[in-house]
Length: 170
Ligand code: 5GP
Image (cartoon, rainbow, N blue to C red):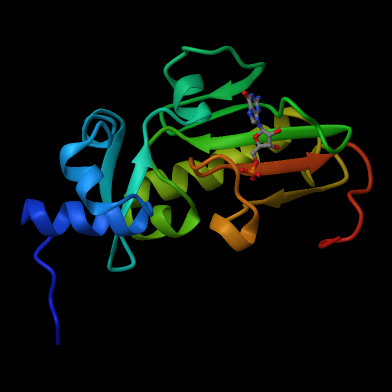
């Protein structure tokens, strides 16, 4: 079996270059190297090298560099209203850790972080009176990567409620 040693900088750079569709020389000699070093963290992701973008919009919200309409926060999650609501209630719940998507989270999050996110979704649903205890139910949805239609590369669950949510896939 062929094995990549990811600790070897040249191979690491080549893999990042390939994944991000940037020319290899540019990632070594060009400005992209600076961006890569300052903004991206490598994470193991299904055997490939993936990069968490520290400048994605939710990372900036977590660092309080841009504002949000906060609903709830604890050690593991932050929840706030979606800026472009698709239903009467449209909340987002994000883990505080740097996870690109649900696959990254499932592989790399600690058990406490996983429990914290699932519990956090339930706490937020209760707060918004859309849980089965306090309301009439809701939809929790996570878009994952390209075919899932994910736009912001920090794991997030959408909570839709306050009215009938409609067809699962339109
Ligand atoms: P995705 O398509 O990645 O699953 O969903 C990203 C969501 O983030 C979209 O529903 C979009 O409206 C929301 N969003 C994008 N930028 C911001 C922002 O700056 N603030 C808030 N609150 N939501 C945002």
